[in-house]
Image 1 (cartoon, rainbow, N blue to C red):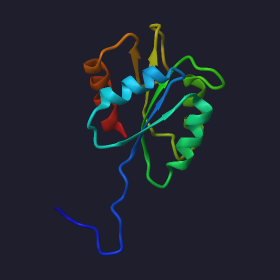
Image 2: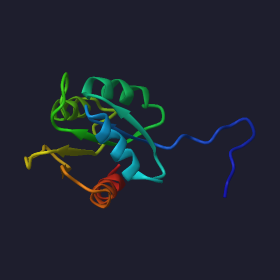
Image 3: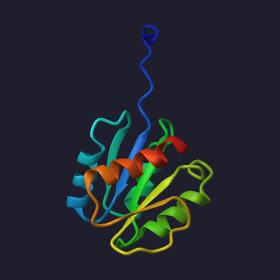
Length: 129
């Protein structure tokens, strides 16, 4: 195991951003992810998520898990905003929705889902980042 040189700090782990207007879903997804080796952060809508993403630029954004239907900025609008910004163009997005629907790219995790299904979806997408 290597250690950083004296005075240096190890680089923070990349960020997984959970975006849903339902606090219970965000909490459940955070618990489902369990001990992944990434930091996990939450946002209540796409507007808040973009602010969190922009603040993460030095450390890196590994994955966005976004509800399709949210107020202010929904998951599809968030996806478009991320793709329009070169810093986030390659960040994978895992969509969650209560309806079976086409998504621009990536994976759709349909509600209701269980912890095993959520973890499988995240691990299917996370290596892409």
